[in-house]
Amino acid sequence: MNLLSSNDLSKEQIERIFGIADSVLAGKEEAALKEGSILALLFQKPSTRTRVSFEAAMAQLGGATIYIDAMTSQMSRGESFADTSRILSSYCDFIAARLNSHADLLQMADSSSVPVINALTDLEHPTQALADIYTIRNHRHNLKGTKIAFMGDIATNTANSLMVTAAKLGMEISLIGPKNYAPNAVYFNKAREYSTVYVHDTPEEGLEDANIIYTDTFVSMGQEKEAEERRRIFAPYQVNAHALELAREDALVMHCLPAHRGEEITDDVLDGPRSIVWEQAKNKMLIAKAVLLFLSV
Ligand code: CP
Ligand code: NVA
Image 1 (cartoon, rainbow, N blue to C red):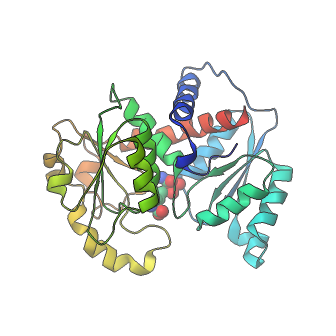
Image 2 (cartoon, helix red, strand yellow; image 1 turned 180 degrees about the vertical axis):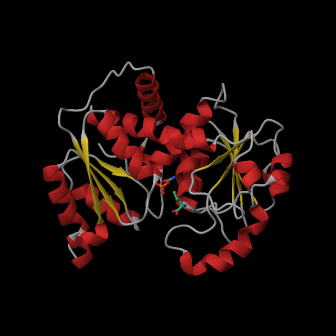
């Protein structure tokens, strides 16, 4: 089994991963990795949290990791994703890949003899969404009916994975962003199969009754050429003190990080009492462990 897309996980599987994370946290792991397990981390894009949380998770579970910067591998000279994956899977027990293109990840999975984990692509960030919802679950008694508002670039990878994962658990979703940056239709329609998903172009409408306000960068990795235009167009969707006033009084704030302070979120909100961003980031390691254990059974 792989973890390539949030679309592939059923509600029961998501809950199983959360259950494993709870057991790991309580020090009562039900599952274990095969002795001497190795995780290959193949990255085409930068990472701090995803890379380090998987490396630390693997070390604490008794395994080892090998980090491969795609640019210093033979991929930089044209070796295919399929051939690379075939080779890595003959040495290692898992592959986690952060790739520019989701289609390349699917190719890697096709040629791999071991589980492949999506560590972010242009379309998705499924392990992030798991860490996000796991964090929300620690604060909200009932996920069903909890309203999460994603404000900013609602067509980005984190929004895609988050809306599908949240919807499967019965959360209500509000997507707030500029009219010309519509959500990705595939993920939007998938999320609507499970729950209510609203799209708004004003924070006033979209944040009403929100329990959670979530944001991500306005300029994702690979979009640097559009940076200036994006910063201008998305500016009205900043998560700031005014945005907090529009949501529920006890609304919590989340961000997958890295934050661009003063762009999509202000310092006072990110570092303020309503922010659960640091807990959310910390939970990435617990979810990394849970995902590895889930895929090894
Ligand atoms: N949230 C997240 O994926 O962070 P990194 O890019 O640092 O891995
Ligand atoms: N949407 C962001 C997420 C970073 C974790 C990006 O792709 O750069």
